[in-house]
Length: 389
Image 1 (tube, rainbow, N blue to C red):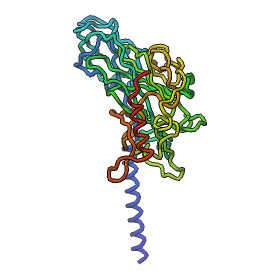
Image 2 (image 1 turned 135 degrees about the vertical axis):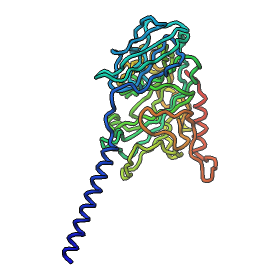
Image 3 (image 1 turned 60 degrees about the vertical axis):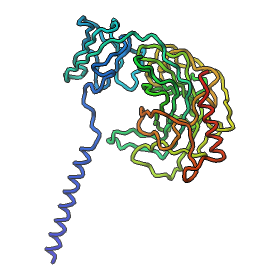
Image 4 (image 1 turned 90 degrees about the vertical axis):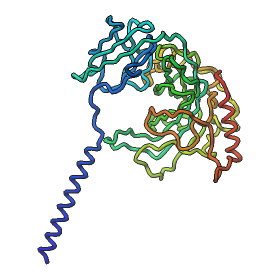
């Protein structure tokens, strides 16, 4: 009997050890490995017709232009970095010098790896007409804020720790066909005069209205209350370096929610909540009692020319001078509520959702919102109709 029990125990230990080995192997396989060097994406893609004076965008890891050459109609040209154009989430922005004329054939070829030999890439483009027209300025900016249970990355899950998220909705005009792509640069400041930059990031404007999620840890607040900690400003510039002359800005959220400390952390940053009337921020862009509000003229802040794309350096904003006047307070001329139709948004920084809306949760069975929620919706819609100042 004792021998049988010992054999059973040994068999159980063996099974447990085997399962541990299998699970460890799966965990290792699923871990976030460092990316391999090389070019992964280009914009525009090979075969496209693209304004001859517009910057091209390259995304990859450990890439450079040192091993890359360019020709225009078979004649040597140079591919140079374009520091005046934000990279819009890519690794490099570069343009052809001298700029090719309309109809000329562009060939870019070479090894983009900076640390060792990689596969040679060949990109063929046709130059379109030069783009010399500034893009339309964004005429609205609003944001929602969710202070959720702190999310801690394990370090091997390809995610970043964060404590809260802003969902910023930018309202503008849809990009024109055949023109250079338009880039929105979002800058965060500690003051409503836009003189104390905190961070900035950029993304392509792919629709008339889009929502961008920005996740950060609590240290970005610098001890301030989350909904009052940051003012945001958005500016527009196109890939040819033409900058819109006006900006949009917002300093108070439309909706704000703070989860209780006892809330269970999730395995990933949460998606944007389904906002309710109780989440309306007093004095914010969707507060019915706020009115259209004012605030002083936005200071020149960081924008003195082309967009830099660096964070918190004071040079990240698109050119066109300072913030448009009349905004810095509760209302920015933007559509209140952002993408508050419920469930939209979330994800890592850089995730953009098109078609942000301005709505609040209704009653059960699809009933219309009542009371404060209805007033908030009306206020939100009114703000959405305001044009650029």
